[in-house]
Image (cartoon, rainbow, N blue to C red; front, side, top):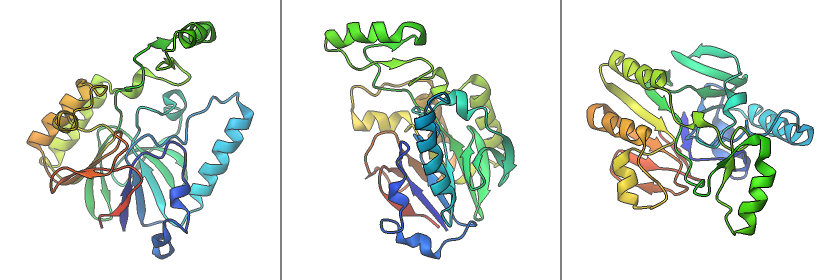
Amino acid sequence: MIYITGDTHGDFRRFSTDIFPEQKEMTKDDFVIICGDFGGIWCQEDNKKAMKNENYWLDWLDEKPFTTLFVCGNHENFDRLSAFLIENRYGGNVHVIRPSILHLMRGETFCIDGNTVFAFGGASSHDISDGILQKENWKEEAKKLDRRGKYMYRIDGLSWWKEELPSDKELQNGLANLDKTGNHVDYIITHSPPASIISLLGFGSYKQDILTKYLEDIRCTIDYQYWFMGHMHMNKRFTKQDFLLYEQIVRVV
């Protein structure tokens, strides 16, 4: 079985047995895939209270009967995420967060429950219109912005990371792996929607970027059965193939 859901932002309560009773029939050979903004790797390691809470919920999720897979979003602590052990699982590279919590790395293809899955996480943050503050003096700068009624800012290395968007190496890795599949996959899992979906939504704060254009090129050239994406905090079907997910948990296999 494969279930897919949208952004969790570190809140995994939707996977409680009361809300997601289907898990009673699942094993570690069944999967829940999160379309980015996993949020389980977020706080700073020197914040002992936050780390204790984070580890509690990661352990809670790891003890579930299923295996959790996720692509990264834009709201992840990329410094910490990149430090986890990399292993080859299901035919592609993953970061091992817990024995049954795995980060599907960008541009990798996987064979999951007999299906070919292309994973590509990341997105541009849209809540930064008042700027990115530097870690060294962010408190002083934040006070100035707050006094002016400007709250749409984030802090480099604390609540925002440039790695939210992919590197050239990751982009090329994705194309190379798709080429190996003959440009045919069963499922595409991303956080960001491709450019055409962004345009259809018409949200002014969501701009086109290198990733949305890259994903649009893939949408136009790759043969796929279904594409699942997050980021927009809504549940919406655009075509018979393209789905935005947020709180919904949908079964695909």
